[in-house]
Amino acid sequence: MLTFYLKYFPGNIFQNSFCFAISDLCAFVLAGVALKTTTIQNGIRFAVCIAFSGGLLYLCLSEQPKIVPAVICLARVGQTMIFNISVMAVSRLFPTQYVSTAYGCTNLVAHVFACLSALVAEIPNPLPFLIFECLLVVAALMTFKITEVNSIEHKSKDQGKNEIVDLDASFD
Image 1 (tube, rainbow, N blue to C red):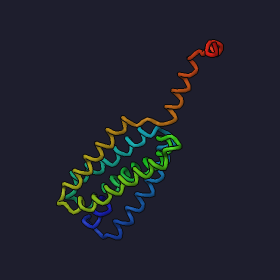
Image 2 (cartoon, rainbow, N blue to C red; image 1 turned 120 degrees about the vertical axis):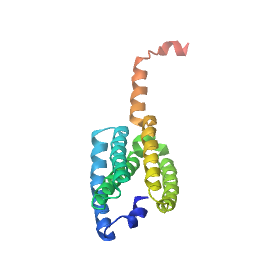
Image 3 (cartoon, one colour; image 1 turned 60 degrees about the vertical axis):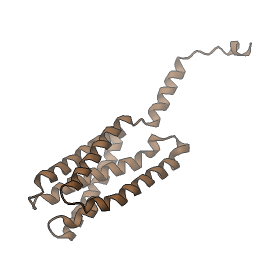
Image 4 (cartoon, one colour; image 1 turned 60 degrees about the horizontal axis):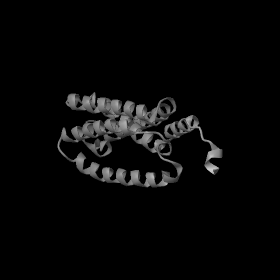
Protein backbone atom coordinates (compact mmCIF):
# COMPACT_ATOMS: atom_id res chain seq x y z
CA MET A 1 0.00 0.00 0.00
CA LEU A 2 2.81 2.39 0.81
CA THR A 3 4.22 2.06 -2.69
CA PHE A 4 0.87 2.86 -4.28
CA TYR A 5 0.37 5.71 -1.84
CA LEU A 6 3.77 7.21 -2.76
CA LYS A 7 2.30 9.52 -5.38
CA TYR A 8 0.31 11.36 -2.71
CA PHE A 9 3.28 12.18 -0.49
CA PRO A 10 4.50 15.77 -0.59
CA GLY A 11 7.76 16.51 -2.38
CA ASN A 12 9.49 15.13 -5.45
CA ILE A 13 8.36 11.60 -6.33
CA PHE A 14 11.90 10.65 -7.40
CA GLN A 15 13.41 11.74 -4.09
CA ASN A 16 10.64 9.92 -2.23
CA SER A 17 11.34 6.78 -4.28
CA PHE A 18 15.03 7.07 -3.44
CA CYS A 19 14.14 7.33 0.27
CA PHE A 20 11.97 4.23 -0.10
CA ALA A 21 14.87 2.34 -1.67
CA ILE A 22 17.23 3.34 1.16
CA SER A 23 14.63 2.35 3.76
CA ASP A 24 14.21 -1.01 2.03
CA LEU A 25 17.96 -1.63 2.22
CA CYS A 26 17.90 -0.81 5.94
CA ALA A 27 14.95 -3.14 6.39
CA PHE A 28 16.73 -6.01 4.62
CA VAL A 29 19.70 -5.68 6.97
CA LEU A 30 17.55 -5.27 10.08
CA ALA A 31 15.41 -8.29 9.18
CA GLY A 32 18.49 -10.49 8.88
CA VAL A 33 19.88 -9.21 12.16
CA ALA A 34 16.52 -9.69 13.89
CA LEU A 35 16.23 -13.29 12.69
CA LYS A 36 19.82 -14.04 13.67
CA THR A 37 19.57 -12.59 17.18
CA THR A 38 15.96 -13.23 18.23
CA THR A 39 13.09 -15.59 17.61
CA ILE A 40 10.70 -15.17 14.71
CA GLN A 41 8.00 -13.92 17.05
CA ASN A 42 10.17 -11.23 18.59
CA GLY A 43 11.56 -10.19 15.21
CA ILE A 44 8.08 -9.68 13.79
CA ARG A 45 6.94 -7.88 16.94
CA PHE A 46 9.93 -5.54 16.69
CA ALA A 47 9.13 -4.85 13.02
CA VAL A 48 5.45 -4.29 13.85
CA CYS A 49 6.46 -1.74 16.49
CA ILE A 50 8.58 0.14 13.93
CA ALA A 51 5.84 0.09 11.27
CA PHE A 52 3.10 0.93 13.75
CA SER A 53 5.01 3.91 15.13
CA GLY A 54 5.64 5.17 11.58
CA GLY A 55 1.97 4.82 10.66
CA LEU A 56 0.82 6.44 13.88
CA LEU A 57 3.24 9.33 13.43
CA TYR A 58 1.93 9.80 9.89
CA LEU A 59 -1.63 9.96 11.16
CA CYS A 60 -0.61 12.60 13.72
CA LEU A 61 1.86 14.61 11.61
CA SER A 62 0.58 14.26 8.03
CA GLU A 63 0.04 18.02 7.84
CA GLN A 64 3.78 18.75 8.13
CA PRO A 65 5.35 17.99 4.75
CA LYS A 66 8.97 18.15 5.94
CA ILE A 67 8.46 15.30 8.43
CA VAL A 68 6.25 13.05 6.29
CA PRO A 69 9.04 11.36 4.23
CA ALA A 70 10.96 10.32 7.35
CA VAL A 71 7.81 9.03 9.02
CA ILE A 72 6.78 7.09 5.93
CA CYS A 73 10.26 5.60 5.66
CA LEU A 74 9.90 4.42 9.25
CA ALA A 75 6.63 2.70 8.38
CA ARG A 76 8.24 1.26 5.24
CA VAL A 77 11.19 -0.16 7.18
CA GLY A 78 8.86 -1.98 9.56
CA GLN A 79 6.58 -3.23 6.82
CA THR A 80 9.49 -4.51 4.72
CA MET A 81 11.03 -6.16 7.77
CA ILE A 82 7.78 -8.02 8.45
CA PHE A 83 7.67 -9.26 4.87
CA ASN A 84 11.32 -10.34 4.82
CA ILE A 85 11.15 -12.08 8.19
CA SER A 86 8.00 -13.89 7.08
CA VAL A 87 9.61 -15.11 3.86
CA MET A 88 12.88 -16.15 5.49
CA ALA A 89 11.13 -17.86 8.42
CA VAL A 90 8.96 -20.26 6.41
CA SER A 91 11.63 -22.98 6.55
CA ARG A 92 11.81 -22.58 10.33
CA LEU A 93 8.04 -22.67 10.75
CA PHE A 94 7.11 -25.75 8.72
CA PRO A 95 8.52 -29.27 8.40
CA THR A 96 10.59 -29.80 5.27
CA GLN A 97 7.93 -31.75 3.37
CA TYR A 98 5.46 -28.82 3.69
CA VAL A 99 7.76 -25.86 2.94
CA SER A 100 6.90 -25.57 -0.76
CA THR A 101 3.17 -25.76 -0.01
CA ALA A 102 3.56 -23.12 2.69
CA TYR A 103 5.41 -20.86 0.26
CA GLY A 104 2.61 -21.32 -2.27
CA CYS A 105 -0.14 -20.51 0.25
CA THR A 106 1.65 -17.47 1.62
CA ASN A 107 2.38 -16.30 -1.92
CA LEU A 108 -1.31 -16.55 -2.81
CA VAL A 109 -2.38 -14.58 0.28
CA ALA A 110 0.34 -11.98 -0.35
CA HIS A 111 -0.83 -11.49 -3.93
CA VAL A 112 -4.45 -11.05 -2.83
CA PHE A 113 -3.41 -8.39 -0.32
CA ALA A 114 -1.17 -6.75 -2.92
CA CYS A 115 -4.14 -6.48 -5.31
CA LEU A 116 -6.29 -4.96 -2.60
CA SER A 117 -3.57 -2.52 -1.55
CA ALA A 118 -3.91 -0.56 -4.80
CA LEU A 119 -7.58 -0.05 -4.03
CA VAL A 120 -6.93 0.91 -0.41
CA ALA A 121 -4.33 3.49 -1.46
CA GLU A 122 -6.99 5.36 -3.45
CA ILE A 123 -9.31 5.81 -0.47
CA PRO A 124 -9.21 9.36 0.96
CA ASN A 125 -6.79 10.07 3.80
CA PRO A 126 -6.58 8.91 6.73
CA LEU A 127 -8.44 5.64 6.04
CA PRO A 128 -5.52 3.89 4.25
CA PHE A 129 -3.27 4.36 7.25
CA LEU A 130 -5.98 3.29 9.66
CA ILE A 131 -6.30 0.06 7.67
CA PHE A 132 -2.48 -0.23 7.70
CA GLU A 133 -2.48 0.15 11.50
CA CYS A 134 -5.27 -2.41 11.94
CA LEU A 135 -3.42 -4.97 9.82
CA LEU A 136 -0.31 -4.38 11.92
CA VAL A 137 -2.28 -5.10 15.09
CA VAL A 138 -3.53 -8.34 13.51
CA ALA A 139 0.07 -9.25 12.61
CA ALA A 140 1.22 -8.58 16.16
CA LEU A 141 -1.58 -10.71 17.59
CA MET A 142 -0.82 -13.56 15.20
CA THR A 143 2.76 -13.77 16.45
CA PHE A 144 1.42 -15.33 19.65
CA LYS A 145 0.37 -18.39 17.60
CA ILE A 146 3.74 -18.93 15.89
CA THR A 147 5.64 -22.06 16.89
CA GLU A 148 8.95 -22.88 15.27
CA VAL A 149 9.52 -26.42 14.00
CA ASN A 150 12.86 -26.66 15.80
CA SER A 151 11.25 -26.00 19.17
CA ILE A 152 8.63 -28.69 18.48
CA GLU A 153 11.35 -31.20 17.57
CA HIS A 154 13.32 -30.35 20.70
CA LYS A 155 10.22 -30.82 22.87
CA SER A 156 9.46 -34.21 21.32
CA LYS A 157 13.08 -35.34 21.76
CA ASP A 158 13.04 -34.23 25.39
CA GLN A 159 9.80 -36.12 26.00
CA GLY A 160 11.26 -39.23 24.36
CA LYS A 161 14.21 -39.24 26.78
CA ASN A 162 11.91 -39.54 29.79
CA GLU A 163 10.12 -42.62 28.51
CA ILE A 164 11.51 -45.98 29.58
CA VAL A 165 10.69 -48.69 27.11
CA ASP A 166 11.06 -52.33 28.09
CA LEU A 167 11.96 -54.03 24.84
CA ASP A 168 11.77 -57.55 26.32
CA ALA A 169 8.16 -56.98 27.39
CA SER A 170 7.13 -56.02 23.87
CA PHE A 171 8.28 -59.38 22.42
CA ASP A 172 6.38 -61.51 24.94
